[in-house]
Amino acid sequence: MGRDITDTGLELEPHQIIFRPLVTEKGLHKAERYNQYAFEVHPLAGKEQIRRAVEELFNVKVVKVRTQSRRGKPRRSRFIRSHTKAWKKAIVTLNENDKISFF
Image 1 (cartoon, rainbow, N blue to C red):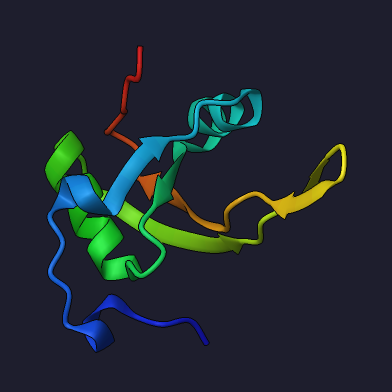
Image 2: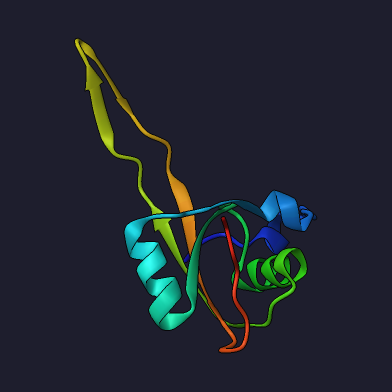
């Protein structure tokens, strides 16, 4: 089970919870068809904090939040082996009347 931000006692502002929207072909398809938007979020943020942050930043009504903890991928540059950073992804389903425009 993942750690929750309430366990650490950290209080984050909404702009600190949501790092950036994930604008991809798959994400735009989900936005048009299912009214779902993907964001990169703070790794310690819980679903309730993500819900409040999206509602406050974009003035929309959130129906459901799903999260994924993404593992870093191994990379290699000549003789040096490293990993990309691990990150957390949130897929937010909005009310059918609400939309978010990134462009």
